[in-house]
Image 1: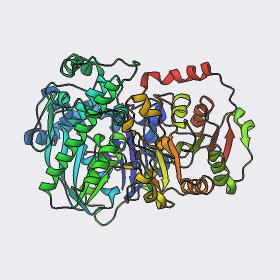
Image 2 (image 1 turned 120 degrees about the vertical axis):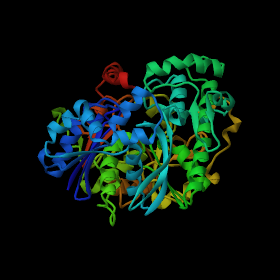
Image 3 (image 1 turned 120 degrees about the horizontal axis):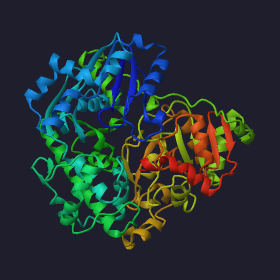
Image 4 (image 1 turned 90 degrees about the horizontal axis):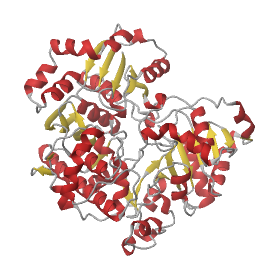
Length: 594
């Protein structure tokens, strides 16, 4: 059985995944090929690589599964009505399917003439892919995002036989919409900037909670509803900014304006409210299902700070946050949802391969690159690169199949030592070309994580934040009042990967899931004495993460990265580009700046 899952075409982050005989073969986002952030075009290129990885042709595909029910989406957008049994039933009729195909699925029918076409409810796509990667045999789930079909949030239960949605919040103006609206109010206009606000929040104080509460109504179970409706398009969000400004008593921030303490306080207030309602809803989920396990999924589950709080609160004994919380894995989720419904995976769970589900990088093809290769033997590579990192060098690290999702996990990463003074601002400004306040994630050897952070469970996919142990902290940053003071104060031995509140978004690195990366960290620990490296995605502001060795080379020579490793080949940066040339190269991504 050859199943192709496709997702993201009705909104953002189109993607494709291939499963053959219950084994995950390949999965990737189309943005990695088109080089357009969050691209929602039909994923021709991702599909092509799926077929190539599976050594099959389009005619061999048995089933194509979409990660949303398009008829319900169009019906909801047209009627602006809440979900109902009638609407759900209409979407399953042959007439609805035929109507949908007439203007949505011509391309699928043309490419895959022998395949049957199926649909998965969007929130099922999130929940079921999370379930199969969790290791749980049964669990309740909490799925929150912008909107899938009629709903912005769903709760339910899943085991090896069934998946049931018991409650849902209709329309798009829920918790995800609130976060996006305030993100826009704070001057981060592009889709996907919510994580910037999450990163900004620890610099502030939650002084605007009461004012933000005036933007929505709530119920006793944690559900919220904005008092004015909005869509996610910037034009729709812009129409609500005067209302938000009036309620907040503050003008909205224009893109490019300086960030002030007011802005950090609004971010802190928004994050406070977000966490509060996530915990409230989770308590409601617990009251409905007799299980110790919770799956936290959907786009809002990418808020790893809230995921960490949810895990620490112990409302559920075990909480598993989706490794790819947003729509970038929706095609994979749709394919898995079909297999779950057909009971094909009843007695087995697929291997996610550490979420390294994309293609390899190939080799650098630019002729000039060969003149900058350093002679390093393959067996000496981990120790050599660890030594370079310990000396303060910044490294582009490209190894094996690329990661699925927005987080670099050591396959398409930029790495640096967290011990280098001012490395956070230097990397943000000179390499990533982004705001200096943005924190970096620590990659840490899983066997050493409990010596550094207050966590005793894995965070292999950067799903959770944890706090630096108190004995490793230098001082309490409460003594520093301004945004700039809190940003610049050295909080600990590794301040570049520890936020101002001593939190860190961890990637715990195991020898099983990440063997090459684990060897590098082990060698770095021998030399530098710490089992931690800065790990950030191999891209610049506005650019999708690099896919190929050639894309890595272009990013490498247009930034201040010192060394590039692709496979077992090491390149030294010629540093022949001027600052103006680098900025000119960067302009191609400015329309998609995040």
